[in-house]
Length: 273
Image 1 (cartoon, helix red, strand yellow):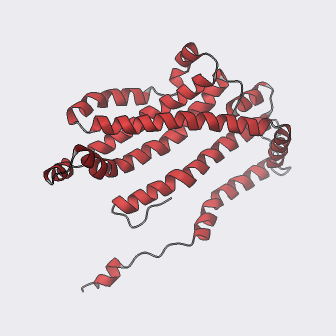
Image 2: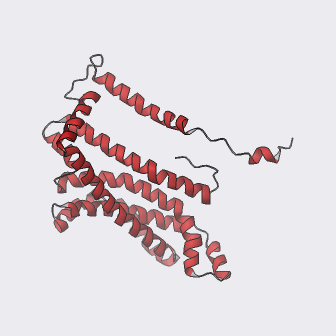
Image 3: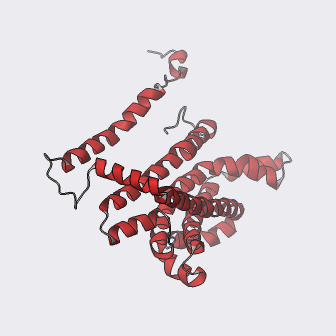
């Protein structure tokens, strides 16, 4: 039996935004309830093992009143944005530039794989020797982490673009810039965005490790001081804030951008966020 064409082309109805938000909030609510139950008198988990949500909240309010919390958050976000900006811009630019030539790309691909594997916290000893115990070391570690991830994924994305598209543009009288702008960048966008999203996550991990070793301020220092002084609420608060900030950046910036890219250039009618 033939299927009417209208049934094939009919768009799938979108789920209301409030339903999507509510569904995604369920795991967090379950985790919070389990945390509260484990630290309650019924759970019996000692406070020196895991403090209650109320204790962590009280600690956050105390640090906020002192100004310590806001200062730590702003310091970490500032270093993260600076290192991420330099790493992502150079990673995308060089990835596209190298990817335009297959011979050059084949030469750099093994190097990109190698440095992607050793990027990040492994460079902390050298960063401290080069830049000292300062914000420069922390920023370099973030840059190092983000750059190689973005460069590698951009290079891979450019390599997936069929060369017939570039040849068609040149045949029709287009320039090299037209090839880059009309074919390579749109075709590599999914790979670029994957590199950026992964870079944010790994960048935060590197930031915290670098702050613990080479900085006197930030969320990494808050966690380290919590461990040194046995202030477990500080540790839990720092972990929570890092996850929250990273999730917010991904949700507000990269997930919508990736969804629009897939809808504009991909085959999916709608991309998940």
